[in-house]
Structure formats: C-alpha cells, structure tokens
Length: 180
Length: 192
Image (tube, rainbow over all chains, first blue to last red; front, top):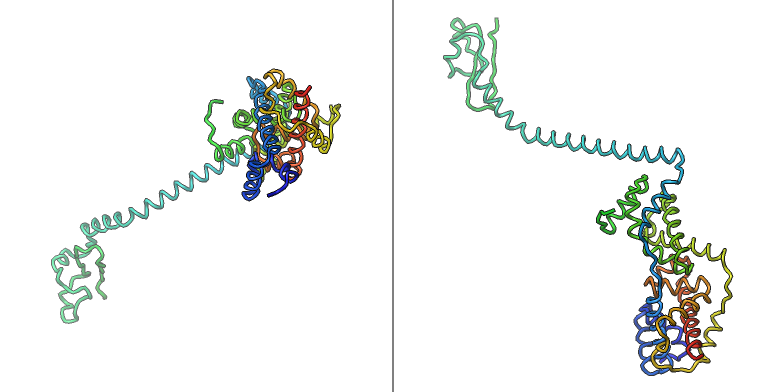
C-alpha cells in the first residue's frame, strides 16, 4: 500500500476521476485505512461544493446584442468585404452549377429511359406509312424475293423496286431500283 | 436568435457562415458559449464585471480572427483559450497580490489539527463565501484559474491543459497546491 506522502498528491485527481484504474484502486484502499487522508479527501470535496455554491453567475441579459453591436463597429477593410463578396458569389455560382448539372443528369436519364420506347413507337409508324415509291403494282407482290428479279422475267419487270413489308419493326426494307 | 442549435454539424455550418460575415450565425455561437466563456474569464480575473467585459472582448477577437480558426481544436476550446489569455493578460497588468509557494501551503496543512469533523461546517454560508473569496484572492491567477476551471466549470485536466497551454502535470501540481492552500486558509480561519 502506498504511503501517505505519495497518496496525498493523488487525492485530488482521485476525487476528480483523473487517475488510471490501478491508481484509483490503490488510493481507495489507502483512504479506507487512513484517517488523515480521509479527512483531506472530505475537505477537498467540501471545498468543491463550497466553490460551486460561491461562484457568482453574472447576468447575461443583452450580452449577445452587446457583442454584435461591438462587431458592427469594427471597420472592415476593403479586402475583407471583397472576400466576403467573392465567397458569397462563389457559393451562388457553385449552387447554380450544381443545379444545372442535376438538371442535365435528369434530362439524360430521361432520354436514356424513354428513347427505346420512342424508337419503337416511331418504327411502328414508319412501317405503317411505308416507303412506297414506284409502281403501285409493286405493292401487290409482297411475296417476291427481296433480292431483285430474275433475268428471265426482265421484260415484265416494273421500272423499279421491291418493297418488303413486315410487321417486325427491326426488318430492313431495301429498295432496289432496276438497273438500266 | 430563436434558432435551435444542434451540436457538431450545425456548429460547423454556423462557423462557416460566420467566416463569411454572417452576424446572425455568429450570434448563435455567442448564445451557445457565452456562459462558459464568462466562467473561464471569471476563473482568472475573479471579478464579474471584468469577466463580462473580457467575455465580450473574447467574442470580438474570435470574430476578427475566425479566418485563422482551422478546426484543429474544437471551437469551444479555441474560444476558452482566447478568454483565458485575455484574462491572464489583464490579471498580469493588475497584479498586486502576494502569493505563497506550494511548499508553504503543504507545511501549513501539516500544522493543522488532523480532524475537524464535518469540513468547514462551522461557517455560516455567508461567512464561508466571504472567506472563500478572500482565500481565492490570495492565490495567483494561475492557481485560481485552475481550481475554478476544475471545480466550478467542471473541465477535465486535459481541457484545462489545452486552454491554459501548459502540461497536464503542471495542472495537477497547481490544482494540488490551490486545494491545499484554500484548505489551509479556511482551516486557519476556522481555528481562529
């Protein structure tokens, strides 16, 4: 067990809870068995209570207002005002840039999501309209192969074209003008 | 000033705004820390009027130097340090008190009767306060600051060390001395 001389230096920190755990144990054990140190510890505690009771509490009414009034009276150098202005401006520009970036992102996202549907819709329309130029009779031969006509039937061939109709929007429609 | 103050995140935001010259944001910080800053100043100067004046000066200095605050320490510690420095400077200028060294306090304690029952119980409340005030006057500003910051403001040794910018060991030593000195003064008065 530590001696009184050693412990008396630790009584305050012990009461304040500022010692390591093993020191706390040592001091606690000592105080239980030492009347003088126990009295000293009680005195420290009483002193703390008395100080807290005694401590004046100045009235703080109007304190903040007084501080802000004093701050208002501080002449601000031009560069300081300029810096405040730039900071505020920078923040506004930053906010605007963020807003624009967010808007652009939303627009891109929307376009990305909507485009396939739009394409499908447009394809369907184009299939219905058909690109049908040339002879009306062409439209009557949908079953003809798409790769042109055979040389044997050249005399009967219309001036142009071969159009394939399909309900499939991905089908490629090839129009081949007749070669002279 | 009716805005509710949420610690940490709000504080950072208010400091950022105050750095840009936002008075209202700084006013909220003043509201939050005024009592503690006054307490720190009072711990050193030992005079409520001076403490209030120093606390105002602390906030004005803080506002002027906000740009140099870089969040390496907490805002509160930074404020308390300004307050403590201003108060110690004022006290040094006004110093007219004699002080007793730590060893003397210990020897005075040793000469006292060892047990007096309920500590300081024989004083009336008014008498105890008067004697406490007189006893505190006998301490150096440094010793008084340490014991008041600990006992009244409830700051930890590390916080006191940070605010007064001296090692933790010095804080412990000053606290030990201040306690023993006050104890000796009060006991002696009680004996008389």
